[in-house]
Length: 94
Ligand SMILES: [Zn+2]
Figure 1 (cartoon, rainbow, N blue to C red):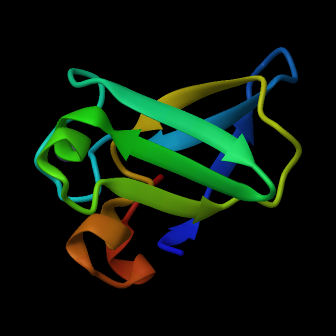
Figure 2 (cartoon, helix red, strand yellow):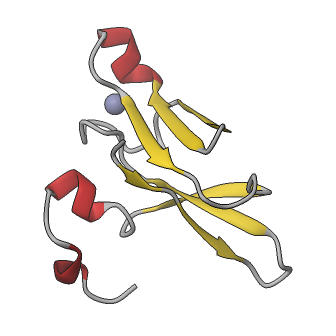
């Protein structure tokens, strides 16, 4: 597993999953590339379809500890520590 899936509640009480804004290899911004996110059995799999075409290691695998989210959005900051291999403390403000 690559880390934990982060979720938040929006102002209407819906659970929103925060997905990495970049694919695992950091090659693509998922907002601009095609990706597929599936949450099942406590795991979120986010596949970058562009990397999948290359046969690379293209999937984020994140542990999901919450109920199935109502929707998802991309977060630029949340997963920086995973893409850059930096400790959480270096992340700064949320
Ligand atoms: Zn990619």
